[in-house]
Length: 342
Ligand code: NAD
Ligand code: TYD
Image 1 (cartoon, rainbow, N blue to C red):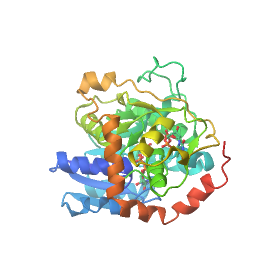
Image 2 (tube, rainbow, N blue to C red):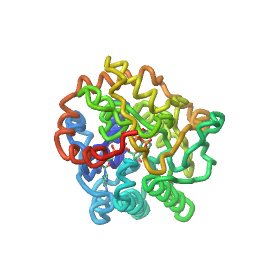
Image 3 (spheres, rainbow, N blue to C red):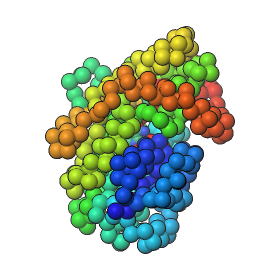
């Protein structure tokens, strides 16, 4: 079987490449990635040694390039991870999010229609459901929860989901969608909460917590997400949406304190800064459907996953030091340099 993995040089996509190489070495994997600031070929160095792995640099919104790839490789399955993925960047500049996340998805769907596939899988996010109030811990997102987005990022991801559903209904394209909660683990780009806090703490820099830090995220170890997607593309029902998450809800401030404790750094490094615009309060997934239908359950508890992740950043300093020595400095200055301290 041939699988195109778009966005495979990013955080979750690369973890998925390694998951597939390990669990299905017989399959051919083609990673299609534009290598934006978030894509990193160093991450795929080991994968490039496998004869069943191939890397192709292209933009998913480039119709010519995508069609040429489908014509040459005849993929059976397409798993679309490629996206602009950072909420804060979408608040600064929404346009590229619409281009990649919506137009890019539509080009992939058209290619699937034109050349024929057995499955198109869209990697979506729980952020399409909007947020939940902090004082209603009894509420969770199910697959039936209406789409109700907050940021340009989540609006672009919800738009892509709607397109995928429309291509299934109108053209009977064999699609599935997964909506996952916040991931963490190896190869996570240090603009996101957990790696940013680990790296700042290691450098004894301030840890910028937005607002009070009471916002809640439902954390999933990235390998558990990969296992869920693998199950969906092989055994999931066509036309369905599956929520992925694992009842690992934590307040941001508690996540940050856990990281400081593990690294034996003082809490005085925490700095409360101006809140994110439109900041979602709480995300929480009800994973009953994927558990009942496909037997999926997360294997990694947050307490273990966060320690493994911190250890990975300690053991792989070269990987993140290369990243933060480049354009990242400008990004950091722009986002945090003049941010109001609370
Ligand atoms: P990431 O930003 O780390 O990686 C994105 C990858 O896509 C990069 O390799 C980048 O080069 C590539 N890319 C971007 N634009 C492209 C384009 N136009 N054409 C081809 N490649 C392009 O993102 P991530 O955190 O790994 O997220 C992967 C997917 O999972 C996204 O679709 C995201 O919406 C979704 N998701 C992420 C999370 C999370 O917690 N990170 C949770 C749920 C869902
Ligand atoms: P993030 O990792 O950007 O993921 P998402 O916005 O998709 O949930 O942020 C996770 C939470 O951490 C979110 O509530 C915003 C907060 N946050 C901070 O408090 N400080 C930061 O520097 C960052 C990047 C995020």
